[in-house]
Image 1 (tube, rainbow, N blue to C red):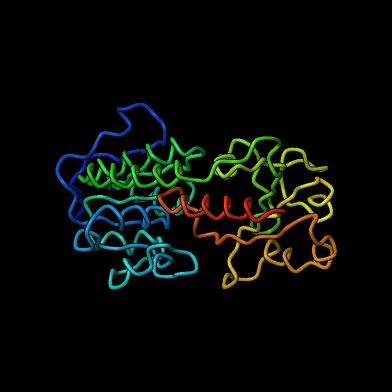
Image 2: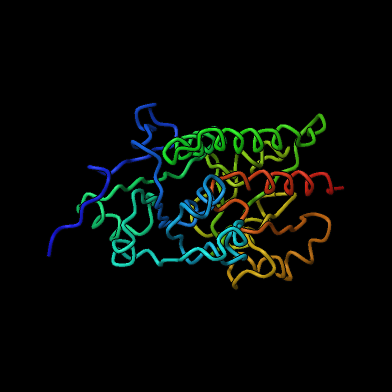
Length: 282
């Protein structure tokens, strides 16, 4: 069997916030792009036309997980397997740094043009990742438009009133909390909230019981889930009798995971919902 050959000689590595050289676009404008990662799906479908996307992940079509389900309709899907990707003869494959590692390793060894997205922990990092991917697919103007729209919505958030800010804890699926230094932490700050995670009785690492969260004295318990999302430990917290008994002391609010699981323009809506929850506090 003759070895497969691709248009690019080596794999590309895309690191959010890295040096400018890490953001060099491949030669030409890729016409058969494949995504192996939901976060890549969401950016690609906003940056390029469907005619240039050969395949996205199956998650892109699920409106519970994806913010681009309508855009993904009609595009072939994959489950992150190398044997699905090779026959498509892609000239650019976009993957995530922590997902589909077996497929990425094999494709890279075969000389496939693999570009890996990192996981930005700041809004600035999100903007740089959008900018880098936009250059890689030959759509820098669309990338700048996405960034401008994101920053404009964040800048338009209602300002927090003077004085101490309300405190909040974000609980993710399986009871894990979002601590300082994360993208969620920055979104809380932009929405006028103080992240209480690092001051919880058991710290901000790992899965925490509701008692530890309540004892931390947060005003808002924000669950990273949606009403139509699959069952999770985080989701059950909003219905916990202890939370109901606290009444006005701790408010519970749910924000769909799809709004901030992936670092993209949709994080603006998550920040807007956080700001609205802050303004609704007594």
